Image (cartoon, rainbow, N blue to C red; front, side, top):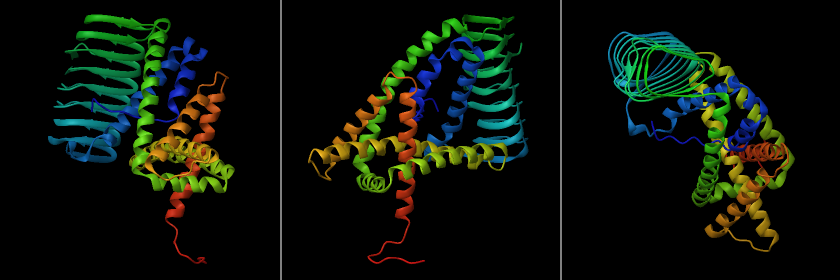
Length: 373
């Protein structure tokens, strides 16, 4: 679970602009909410990017869930109220109210409104919520909430990284405690305390984002090269669809993205719809990733055609992608307010719509004659 990469094609430049906005410079709550969103996204996607044979797990869903007998596997739980009163090997839990009162042999990942951990966790704890109360013993913790409380019985053997509107420590943290807050109380013991206020946090965050931005672009380019190499026919089919109606593809793609977001949010409200919401989020992210990649390919292909260079070979396809990829990233970086974001929205919508029509066309009957229905 420690080596997870989540790629979101529109997130990078939007992130850099949001964090440089005066709202984030002056509003601690806004930054905490942003950190909360990052934790939520990480928790949602962790089980989706790990290979199926990496571990065995059980999926449990319902309104009120109570684990009363030991479970020898890791569990993924979706519910309104979840009580863990028997030992499990590891758990990923999404619920409104979460109470963990039995030992966890592995890692514990939690997302809910009110989260309470009163048991020992042999691995790390990653949690996001409105209120988090932490007791028992654990190795490392990463927490994001409006209110975070380390109970007097809590013991963190290594480090704790916490972001919250208010943080109250009454426990024992052996290693370093990094507290991202303007309201911190320490009535316990800490090996090394570092409090990051709103004035000191932004340079560090922006510095890391600049580094991650460079790595993101490089990694995204490598991903595109691999996909163009493996899926040349699919990329070309999207290119052919693009020739028919660019405006139609853009409008339909934009509406489809909005529809996906609405369905995901509505599904997440109900317990039964939570798995649908997670699956829909995965499909949306894949579509957003592929959107900018296929548009890069289409742009590069068109430029080479205008230069009189037409070919379907691997080298030609990769060259086409790289040309378009460089052009798009240069457009994203144009120092005009909101210009890069507008280009990203148009490109992503255009690619999303083209992919939709290409998939739809591939499922239609293929024949040398016209098909009447």
